[in-house]
Image (tube, rainbow, N blue to C red; front, side):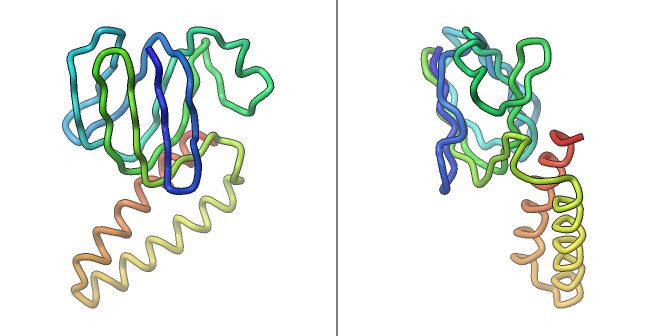
Length: 144
């Protein structure tokens, strides 16, 4: 099964996988080969995939645990037809681009922006801040 994960900035990951696990707004789902067709909104969290051949990624900087590759992803949309998975996400982090300190500073900054938006009754800014905060939390959990 082939998966492609893209963000507005780059292609985060593409390759053959045995399975992919991601978080929707309702539950966590695992997609296996021949999965029924599905389109879903995905929540910022950790995408976990098991590549069919981990050797092909040995020269890249991914975080592996028990042959499982983990990528922090932002809000997005998932589609599968059972043979292919496509994820279009707002943001993504492979776990090597940012330090924990930088992520914690950005999280604090976004929390302050959210508080200001709440004081101003700006619901759209609060929602945007919430999405960014969720993505930053997933990036932090990947780093830790």
